[in-house]
Length: 442
Image (cartoon, rainbow, N blue to C red; front, side):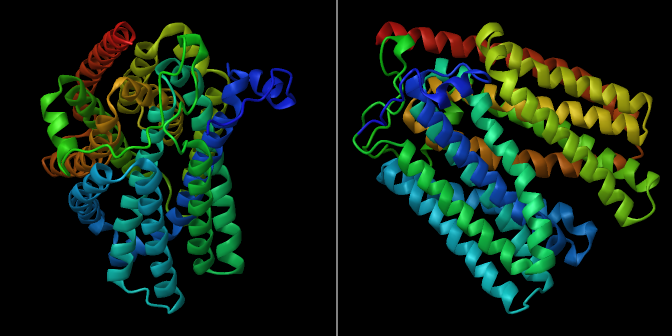
């Protein structure tokens, strides 16, 4: 049965309207999406400090291999996920996927409780948690693209994404408290509980009978449905869809340029911080302050800017902001490679990424068919994303070995940012054409 609408006069509706353009009948689904994403990122940020600590057990020089191991694990899991999506409806395969990851977290809980913190346990934990994070979040956004219309996504996805940002505040705070009082086992148990809470949000958001999940009255009816039928197709259909679709290939290109910019700046950040701060404590404090600034700015943008920006200026404007911010970040750090310039550049760039570009990118998927929303989207956000990470990491290391400094890298990155911006505008135009075609067909 569809979720019951809240009346226009409800206090919750009036409160939310101050931050986001939400209709009364959308309030419940919007809050469920907010809570779901809060639980996902809150749980991941509980585990991330433990992942990073165990991942360094073999030394920092192994991080490139851990990135590559994560990519290989993604390659192995995508066909398995594709087979689940082909045979089962979302009401069945989403719980299976989430509870599989919950069970794996509990296995690591037992290993850590037995004090089996060997180098190999740390390596496997690092790779597995990296895989877990991308899969559960990709599934989350696939379901939202299935339940919300394109117009609703423009208005509401920024606010829903703020739930995840709130989780990035709560998760580290809980991690710091729990690990000092109860030990690392508590982090795994807490993450497992939050993942189950996220699944309960899914059950309440996704309808049982294929009715409209969140009716879009402004569009003249429901334009997104929670279909109860299996999606069908083959286990590798997601990759096949990508190869045959210029639109999906464009999304792959967008994500590869995104990961390249992020990885190159991340490596330069490591070099600058290592030279500026001599001890681990001061480096940790610097990273913590940058993360706090990013999370604060991201939350403000998500709550008060993103939805209004996409509604008034379009998805293209929201997408272009990230390559522009990235080009400015490369230029600023190349001209003045100091920790203060680095902190400001990274804070602004990452905030635009999380608050504006990510919700806009998710809107691009709302105009696709259901098979593409689940299979192709998952392949893009796992295999392509981690493949881009791994490739960019090796490229950065190789250029460094050849003596190419960050100024030379910036000279290459800025023209690529222009290509990235052009691709963003092309994707936005293609999305509008697909939307118009769907409206004419309906």
